[in-house]
Image (cartoon, rainbow, N blue to C red; front, side, top):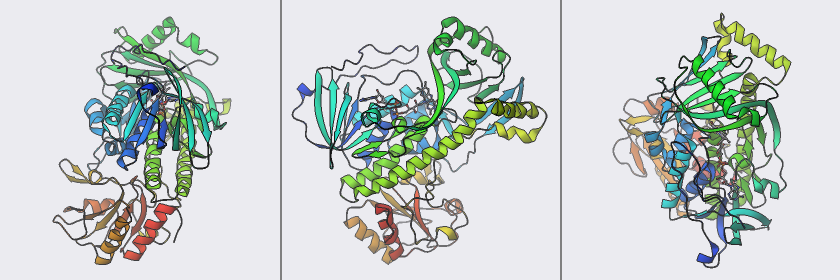
Length: 564
Ligand SMILES: Cc1cc2nc3c(=O)[nH]c(=O)nc-3n(C[C@H](O)[C@H](O)[C@H](O)COP(=O)(O)OP(=O)(O)OC[C@H]3O[C@@H](n4cnc5c(N)ncnc54)[C@H](O)[C@@H]3O)c2cc1C
């Protein structure tokens, strides 16, 4: 019998709320559900909210009675914020988080590189915002509990799974014993140690790195801005790396690499933690300041992914699908994109507007994204924790040269998480004008935001389904007719006319573009150009001049993966 702890987790700044378990005896017989999500972490909850946005109800099973322990993912990217905006929690993250865009790398007491993440007046969100994962999870829980389409069952642990051709039967254990639950689709978001991966005997592919880090959150009042700090080969920790991040509420994350051969148990001994954190504070000129430990853990980097995110009726997302190094803030930020990519496809399938074969593109796109991230993250991981003598020699050469030579300094820059461009996706239109554009978001790219007013941005107007952005002052009559025909079949499709303030026939929204910002960012030169965005806002077609026939072809391809 599953007995999740009812003791709130310990924290010096966060009050854990214990939720009531969902017990089968208090509910009637269970019908077959369309979607069950196993794992109510940040990615599972985002998937539930995405599904709700597309009108699909789901049951969300969470093994524990409270949100996760420790701050874990603390840096959320602009793209994550755009996704969280869609599911209604971005405002709360903005309200509580600390935005930032600079990173500093130090070697031998000298700042050798300053990273500056691009920030444009056209972006609603900062490149990065720091917030402890517990808060983000709390905001997502509130949003899930407020949704009539999401049934969040606390204290429900998935322990068994039998898959059939058109459904799966999940065994769920609770504080009063197990019960079976039938579902057409099972979303596996049960985290890094995914039990569902094991139940299905699926193996992750990739590498695990030797270098171990202590991750410690301390409360301390430091008069420093919110910028990432990285120290290479500091005197107190020779040959190793130390990172520092500011979190809200005067909490600081200190990550330091352990000397080779040290065990996690040795590393987490109170005396060891104390002396090393004191040494780091000394290094930044704040030695002797009082601080308090909140949470600490030992971490080592892994770059692993399942080769396919679909197994029968089960679909993997988040850490259950891939394990990515936290350098470059890749864990949760990648998971949100999985949730978004899966949500709209399941939405179309569950409402009968797409065949389940559409899911093949979910797996191809997201496995491709994970492999790209693994490639990039591998480079940063090898720089931070060189895995061999050769890599160390190279890294040390960059470090010492950087003291005098500016040209090597950019080599310090490990790229942070960014949205994958599905440039080779089967959903991209085969017959559009993608290749004719000289700029603007291309096939598979995420959208470019544009400021339309003091507190008004283009992406605020997207959402809920496919969006057709038409640049100009009118929507051609044949395009209007085609849009209506697709809407009549049940497809959510909106038309946004950009460059026209007043209302216009066939447009769901008319957005003025007096300074031509939208045209410039989207690479549009003439009236009549158009973009088609999928419900996850990625571009699947663009035209210099839109016509009804090509629009219909693009919609068909985007909902089937097959060119007409
Ligand atoms: C120490 C640490 C530090 C990290 N730091 C960062 C960072 O700085 N930046 C970053 O981007 N990422 C970081 N991460 C990674 C980040 O926390 C994860 O990528 C993120 O939590 C993944 O979300 P998820 O929802 O996929 O999985 P999880 O957050 O692991 O959620 C899985 C959920 O499933 C539940 N569950 C598990 N098994 C079952 C079951 N059988 N039945 C029902 N429910 C189940 C769990 O209780 C949990 O709530 C860190 C992780 C750790 C461990």
